[in-house]
Amino acid sequence: MLLDRYVTTILRLRWLVVVFGAGVTLILASAAGRITTTNDYRILFSDDNPQLAAFQTLENTYAASDTVLIAVAPREGSVFDREVLGAIEELTEAAWLTPHSTRVDSLTNYTHSEAFGEDDLVVGPLVEDAASLTGADVARVESIALGAVDLAGRLVSVDGRVAGLTINFVMPENRDLAVIEIGDYLNAQLDAARAAHPDIGYYMTGEVVLNQVLAGATADDLETLVPIVFAIIVVGAALLLRSIWATLAIVVLLVLTIASTMGFAGWTNQVFSPASAGVPIIVMAIAVAHAVHIVTGALAGIRRGRSRDEAIRESLRINVYPVFLAAVTTAIGFLSLNASDSPPFHVLGNMVAFGLLCIFVYSMTCLPAMLSIFPLRAPQTPAGGGFRRHGGSRRGHPARGAERQLDALFR
Image (cartoon, rainbow, N blue to C red; front, side, top):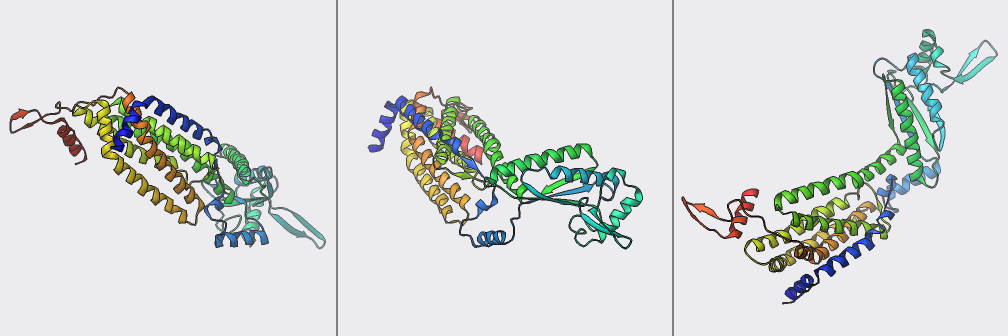
């Protein structure tokens, strides 16, 4: 049979197969550093998306809406307090130094004009040197602010409990780097403001902030969530298989698959976003599902008294078609994401489909080779593979013992 001859060749050249698979993985993984993440929400829309086109036309006609809004809210009382006004004044001065900023508007630097006598007109910021204000001065500021239609409901709430500070930006060509610079600077300023004024709450939002949060979410998924899922899979496999060598084989398969998939993403210059950052997790989940079928099949064969290579051969003979069918149908499902209007889902579908190809190839080559190399032993069942019935005892078939254990586990 062709499959038997194929498996015999894989097992005979097992060291060469493992080395060759590792070499291919290293070549693919060498480009993993080329993967980029973006913090521009526009990537969620295709270039010909009509809503995005209308939005870009609006920005080109008038002005881009690259802004940040910082809300300042005291824990108690209103913003019309000497300390709160002083905090807003300090933050306003610091905001002018934000990278790529062009304008800062706040309650304190609001331009107010006031006439004195018949000939004198004084124009200046509404609040100057807040620390020196008297009670009457604060009351005057409150009266002017809540009476100005371009202040009340915009830079200060009508009830006076929250004040706002807006920063406008002109973004350079490299938006991603500029967003990081802006976010880092403003977060540092807000941390300092919170330390200096613990009774005041500071909240930041806006398009620039949204872009930075998207980039942070993508990086967190790739750097934090993936290792956590990997560790859970390894621990779960070790507890269920009760075989160090079987678990190690699955771990190596996961490493080969993830490294190859992410490396391929680097070679093809893929840009990851929160919508596509789940590629490694999805590929890991599918890989362990395929590998467990082959590994448990080999362990069951060894438990029935077969040699290691014979057990591996039998496991592949039983599982090759189901694994192939599952890989193909799952890949078709993920490739259908290319019909989505959102490009990040194209990346998700294509990268997972490539990962499925890697899973099948490595499961049919490196995995059986590793199982043949490792000193694989099948764990004994709790009752030595036997069972008791009606007070008597007899030796049951080891495979039946394993089946009963699995049935009891998932019942």
